[in-house]
Image 1 (cartoon, rainbow, N blue to C red):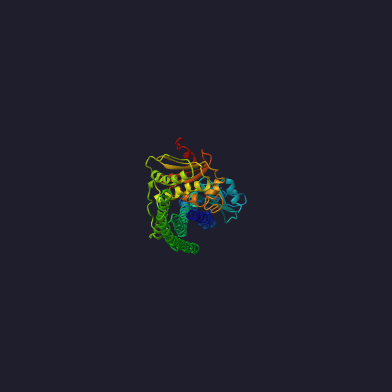
Image 2 (cartoon, rainbow, N blue to C red; image 1 turned 120 degrees about the horizontal axis):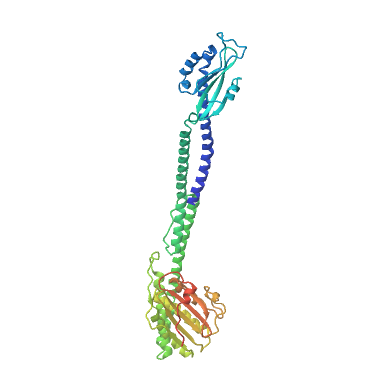
Length: 462
């Protein structure tokens, strides 16, 4: 916007300057020409009294020499001779003669002798031919030479001044446009920057309400929106905390009942599940009540392989009860990922829970882990019927509660992957069913291109 305003101001100012400066420059040139020829006419008029009194050559030469143009060698007088009817002052008639240097063409002089003034071009300038009546009734011609420098005297200086004034107007216009542009652009830039920071999660950002009326209104609306977002998040956090606290009572009863189940694998699994549920509720309460939501907190990482081994140990007991074949590969190393342990546990439980909920008993499944310097890939595969519409399954809450629904489980997995700069893909597994591929980036960058994903070498299946 700022540069557009400057360009518009430049174009308008240049057009206005040209519209005034060009005609004014031509007028200055014409005035200089008129001034030069007016001075030449005045020089020629100084000889008229002498020509009206006498045609004596000596006297006329003295009169010409006494004038400014004659002294500079720029004046000539062409006196006609007797034509047979005119009487001379002596026994012999006078012959025609010229006083001074003649520059004009003789034909132009003869034309002016008929009583008409003329301006003719001569080498180096112009010649003013001014006829003057003699006492004999004939006309002498006074020639005044006007050089080019006299015609253009002061024109160049005037044009330079006009150009300087025009340039000053253009520079002043650009400076004014730049100041006006800054007044418009800076509030807009602040608004855009604040919107970007709000998108990054900085809920405390606000915009100063200044600038033009439209931008002030936009700033007021933005600040109101930010306040509303903070209020909504606060309400959501309070609601989550209240719901979590309401779960405490049934959890306590469930824990007491689980403790009275006695010994056995089923009782141990029930007590472990209740303890896990209680830990998750406690974590939810702490997260909901945590203050300083406007501050950025570092993400706590975890060992992905250790978490996967722990969760597979939990789910393997249930798989054994249902007669499922389980295979785990690639979890021998230590691989740190930028995901908190509870979040990774929730994502794994969501994927494995979908396997148990949406495949028949006895269906085999596998968990493979592949890692490189840039990313970790977690593959959860099964031999079930597969997912008919993978894209729809990744949409948040698609089919939640319906037959064959994946609920919000895959949305939890997607959010965990995207928090690292990765993503989630659903495809057909080598077991014949569904394969959920979770890409976890290790450098916090953008999701890798598909062809780069293909470069990660999968471990052979056994």
